[in-house]
Length: 170
Image 1 (cartoon, rainbow, N blue to C red):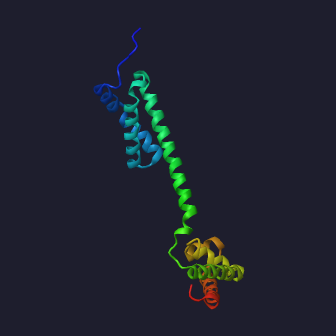
Image 2: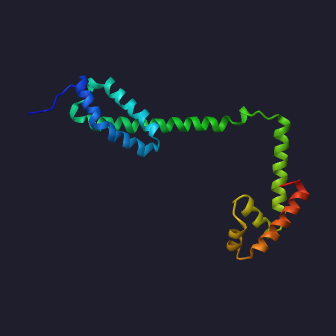
């Protein structure tokens, strides 16, 4: 029986493994992370972990071992990013620099804005939202609603008159 029992802990063997698999592991990680920097970071961690556990890894199974490590480290990174995003999402309001008066005025303004938009005649509201919220050009709005560009301009003009009257400059 000719089982390969090379010791991974030997520096030349480890270097050979790195030279053989690093490029494909980097590509695998880049495909998953879409970031060359993140792929490089995880790749280095993979080989550090391999070195730390070299005495427990069979040479014949090293490829699957490093792929497993790479995938697990990628998944751990994703979990960590989710925790950070959740933390940031739930703690944004606590880190505001605005005064309570500003926050109250902003809330009142938003309520007034929403009520004014809701109170616009349907055709004007439709054009206003398509232009200001969906960022569509008058030409695109005209095509979508099957009306002339002049009709879009007129509806938008009328909507803006109402908005300015109700809440000031828009």
